[in-house]
Length: 463
Image 1 (cartoon, one colour):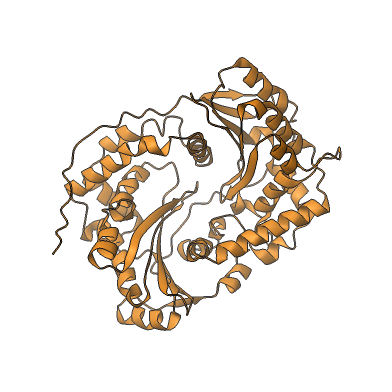
Image 2 (cartoon, helix red, strand yellow):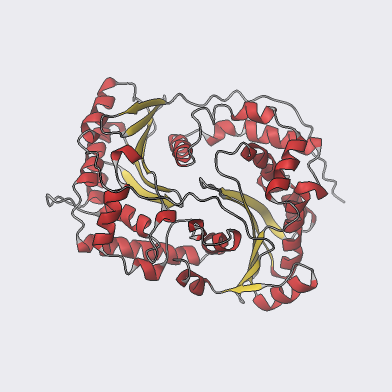
C-alpha cells in the first residue's frame, strides 16, 4: 500500500520584487502605466476601459464585447484598410478582452513597430467609420465565440454559474466571459455601438498599460503622448455602472443535462466580498489548501485516494463589487454525487467543521509566495496583473505587499474569513452530466432538490 507522506516543510522567503511602475497622466486625462523591463521580449499594450459586460443595456447582452471586436477590425473614415490588417503588417497581434467590469484592447508588438502600432490604435479610437460590413464580421466572431464557449463544460458553466450564485437582479448575473447572448447580439445595430463608444471610450476614463524593454527612452514616451494627446476629452454622458453590493443565493443545486457525457463536471461557486477587501488574502490561503495546490485537500481525495478524477482546480472570477471563488473537477459519471458532496463538504469544512491545520496553512503560504516570480515572469503576465489592479481598483502597493500581508495572517483568520463567506450555508453547485442519475442520487445523498437548467432558455432570460 502506498503511503502518502507530505514532504518536509522548509520555510523559504520569497525574494521577488514587483517591477516599478511609472504613472503619467496626459493633458486629456488618459492615464499611462509604464513598466520598463530588461530583455528582448515583445512590448505589451493594454487599453483598459472602465466598463464591461455588466453595463450592457437590457436586451443587448454582448454590446461591450461586440464594440471591442469592431474596434479591432473596423475601418477608419479616411478609407484606409481595416485596423486588423494594419497591425498585422506592423508585426503586432491584437485581441479584445471583456469581462464584467472591463473592456480591454490587448496588443503585442515588437519595439521597432511600437510607435506606428500606437498611432494605429489612436487613429482607430477617434476616427472609426462603423461600416455595416465590419459590424457583421464582428457579430459573426462574437456568435462563434459563444458557441465555442457553450460546447465545453467549463465554458458552459462560466455562462450559467453567475445566475446561480448571485441573488436578485444584479448585473453580475451575466456570463462571466462577457461574450453575451447570441440572439441579443444579432439585434445590435451600429447606432448602439456608436453610443457605447461615445459614453464609454473617453480618455479620462481609460488607462493605457505599456510593458516591455527599452521604455526608459524619452522618445518612446514622446511617441505615446503624440499618438494619444489628440484624443479629445468630451463632456458627453458618462456610462453609469451599477455598483450595488452583491448578495449570494443559498443552497442552489442545478444540473445541465448531457446524457452521453462519459464524465460529469462539478462546479461550486462562493460569492466574495468587494475586490479591495482585506479578506481576499485569507481566501487565497483557503483556496490553495482546497484545490489550487497538487496536494490540496480535494485533489488528494478525488484523484489520489479515490481515483475518480484527474484533479480538482479552482479559479477566481474577480469583480469590483464581489467576484466568485469557483472550485471545479471533472469526475467519473458514476461517482459524480459522491464527488459533489466532497466538494461541498470541503468548502463548508473550511468554515469551522474542518479548519486549516497549522501545517496546511504554512504550506499554502509558502506555495503562494514562492510562486510569485513565476506569475510575473513574462511581459504579458505583468500587463495582465496591472489590468486587474485597475479594474479592481486596488492600491498601488497591493502586489508588492502581498508576501508581507500573508506573513501576518494566522490559521484562525483564514477560518474566520471562510465563515464570513460560507457560514453554514452551501455554495451554489452546478453539475453537468446525465440528469436522471444525478437528480436521483442528489436527493438520496442529501444534497437537496435539483434544478434542471436549460442553457438556451437561460440565455433568453439573461438580459
